Amino acid sequence: MTKRTYQTFTHHEAALRICCEAFDAVTEEVVRQRRILEDYILRHPAFGTSFEPVELLPDAPEVAQRMARAARSVGVGPMAAVAGAMAELAVEAALKAGAAEAIVDNGGDIFVRATSPVVIGLHTGTVKLADRLAFSLRPEDTPISICSSSGRMGHSTSLGQCDLATVVARDGALADAAATQAANLVRTADDVDTALERIMAIDGIDGLVVVKDDRIGLAGRLPYLVKAPR
Image 1: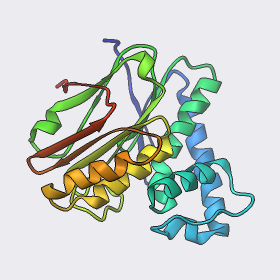
Image 2: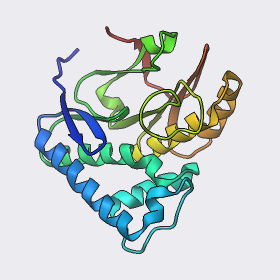
Image 3: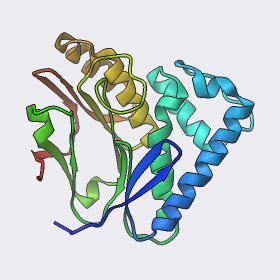
């Protein structure tokens, strides 16, 4: 397994872990896209507050378009897709700057372009089985987005009580929005199957892991599950 070095970067409420030789390109893109999005929300306040999809202004920037498209597919507000969209845009900027690989973890919403195997842990904040599992990604599995949402952890709004909902998709905004919706749907262990069925019906979703209490639900085409490294 390749030895990787991760650096941290904080901007407003976002706390990112970044593994990339073009670190400055990644951070500059995060700051730039955040400024673009904030300027857009000033002109379109509902975009930043709605819990449902909203129509875009005619001159909406690329980041807003990606978020809105994901929100429409999933049935949530566009801000449910912000972290995943930002992570993907940051990786794209790194590759344009000449980086061979880039991994951007934006508060649990991750976009990966790897040139060697990489392990991504699943964290529920509990001592349950799922917290000892991880995805093992091969280079050919990437680029890929792995986004997580929880009713127990993190600062993002969740309407459910899910321990963990993790979505795998090629589109970072879509993975983020779908993870949010999956977590919203789960209040008890009996809701796991419904969440799996509804999220996997969304075009573009590759796979889903849902954890609630002693129930772990898996669906779709997921990367190899392995024991999480300590």
